[in-house]
Length: 237
Length: 237
DNA sequence: GCAAAAGTGTTGTCTCTACACCCATGA
DNA sequence: TCATGGGTGTAGAGACAACACTTTTGC
Image (cartoon, rainbow over all chains, first blue to last red; front, side, top):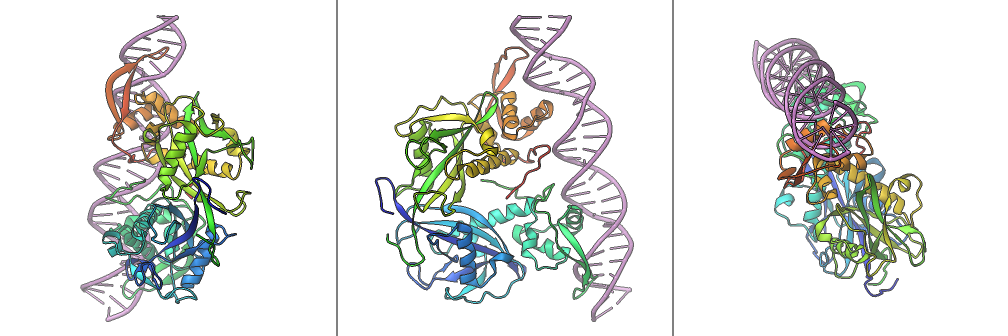
């Protein structure tokens, strides 16, 4: 397709913000760029949208190609589209950002494509920056979206392995929100929410302490009434 | 920019869902298409993104060009990007949809560009369809977004003229949500929400009944705690 | 017994709902 | 005086924060 007056052909990409919880902190999957521009810098995984491909398919394909993760097994959703002129020095490149949440996971095998993909703590990038392109801003938007979604949906279970304790789930909330959550009230809240959790009948013994019941995620996707984070109130756009 | 393997040049457009309340029902701004494809059918206003233009600027420009409305005076935000192959018979066209909310407004002067732009009730399009491209789906998403935003933000004031009564504001909620709202509790709720409304000291006399105080919108943008719609609970994506 | 984490009970506070009731105007 | 919409008071229900308390394990 050629250019007309006031009609620019653009290149379209999809960038992925894949979040997980490891070692008690929130991590994001980043690659080290092997090519210019921003060679050697950290960036979100992503790639070009093919001619006859829908965006969700591109996101799933890139996820597999660049990280070896199975897109069918994790939660993901479209976040927002970024098109500020000059955001890519190569020219007019518009990117559709996706938020993905991955629970129990292997170290991402450097797939066919990317040089290396590694989990990094998100915290330094939320304040300091340091990512290629406008990926700092995309990451901030994604984290805020994830924080908000924990409030009124059951996506927190997507951060967990197939079987998990209520303590595991609570840690997800604490890590993503960055603040403590009362264990007693949390326990009652999630067990009282219809369809959030299903008991497996099994238990798990911690290093020390009473054994905890194991659950798997239930069929519910929304959480009503929502579980609001304590001090820093939600700030929708 | 030319095509490489696995790298398609796409055409990028912005489509606008401009909502307003008139005659007690929710209306959307639609144009009748003057060109193929879908000539003669109703569609959302929109247009191509220019080479050195950010998406918000495209949205604002199209709004002015196609409708004569002043983008600086109304609320708008990015909604979502639609890229399903085949959504536009002309080829690979990806569109970024915007939600805009307009309050007191003139009949849109058919601007320089569009053949005619007219306000139409949204209701038939939410169920039956009938719009060009995938604009039915976009409209549904936009209305659901607007309904959700009334719950936890103060955007409802964007549907109102500069000065309005609490009854006016309540009607916005009732029309957008499609269900009645208790006038007494609504009154207390919005007056109790810090920064939602500012008294002007003026009053307005209805055709019959006690005069109502006039307000203008306050500085607040979020509504905490939120005002939840009654029966059909929120269904976030 | 002690530490640690899981899980239960209880109380005060806050908010919402549902409604009764009063107020100010035009006809 | 009545109809109509604006605005206030209040009682009951539900949810939540805070925290005391019990349970179950390893050491």
